[in-house]
Length: 461
Image 1 (cartoon, helix red, strand yellow):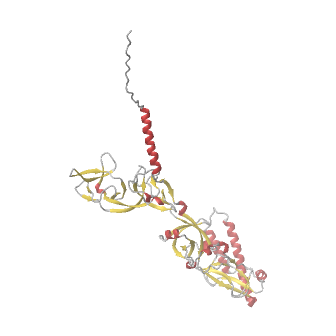
Image 2: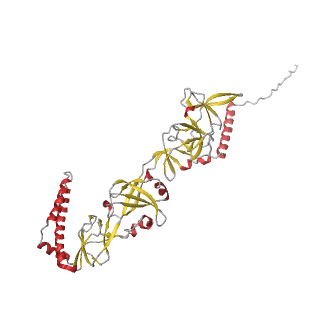
Image 3: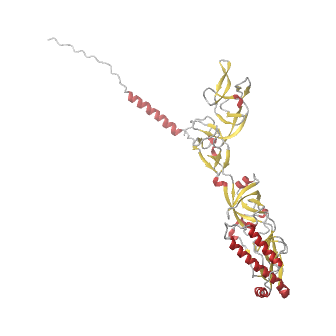
């Protein structure tokens, strides 16, 4: 048999590419590139805007020193002293104020004298009638407890008047061993001294505010005194001041104002007062708060705790590091208009197309507006660009600028300057106005350090 010829035909092999492998490879390359970019590109720190206020710094409490016009009086004789006017009461010139008895037997003498002549004079009765009349005119049936207070006060006044009548008789009988002394000046009488009587704002120093080293010497009936020793003082002026310690920041703040609202922490009284900032003897800053009333209310207090009540500013809270200053182009509002179906503001800008000048309606981002003008970034126009008014042929040449402070908004992945209106500040933050039409909104993202970026810069977060 004849052998059959076997013909083997060899075909070139083709590489079959799987589509899935190709896609996987492309994704891997993309991811690799992004990983490289991520680790080699500097990230920009951002801050998410939140609401805030300066409440913690607005109402600050202070330990103040009361500065009054105080006149210290000394004893004219040596002996045992007895006072006849309650501390904190108002006295006029030559009011019978105290007596000095060299024997120390005044109480015995008073007791015997009052038994001999317990009657009241016509002047005494007039005094009591005045007290009763005042009580009747101010009677409040809702405040029943005042009846008992009045009863106690009236009884004490009767005893005082009888004693005063007796004192005059004793003074005549005892001669050199006993003397009745009158007030040397008009004012509020105090039976204490503390060496702050002559204090002036220029003499202030931090050590004076230390309560631990403060010494207040009080006088009372029955103590023995020597001639020339201080025994009482009078406060002769209704105007008085409260000195408080200020930091440099507080001094700068209150130098700009003439008046403040204060609250007395002792009893909650709130009032307004004048204020000025001074430097004390130690070259530190002090606030001098001056009042024309309430002196008698706090006359026995040298240290007066107060709170300066400032208006609390509420708004958006931004870091101080975010703030930058930037020049914006000024464009009169008569050159702007809403275009088409958009509520965005645009401008007729002249452009050159193939050598011909024509107008285009251009929508730049508005950074801020006021009553007369729009303000836009200098990166969005060229100096010398020409705008045409919407309703006339008038033209405006871009060039005039105005400086503003603001922050860089990065909501869209690149920096956009947004002007802010600062209301107040704390140590690390500004409180800025919320609700401006072109301003910041709650939860906007802004660059944490505004000095590290520029306008229209793409941001990697």
